[in-house]
Image (cartoon, rainbow, N blue to C red; front, side, top):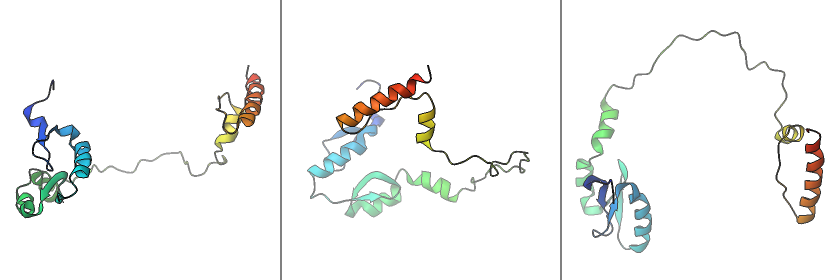
Length: 138
């Protein structure tokens, strides 16, 4: 495991012998949950990757390492937004006289290659018509 430090390795909550890279833990938990259906663990509300047995759950909630991150955003007054004056413009995109966009019409009238779909006989006819359509652009 090149480039990985000890902090990057975590222990699986289902089997303490499983040591997994932190970035692979989510996939590992999905597989391990199927292998250990009898083990009941609760998800931490602050980090869904924290799976804790019921007796230890309250203790984990009080000491969860991610608790400080949630508390920082919950209680700090750092939710300031940039405010600016309204921008004046001559453009009005609501009053346009263009019709609705139809992708079939656009593709049919421009030099765009389309893929045939359907039964073999329909694909053969489609290819023949596509050749005719694309020749008008040459």
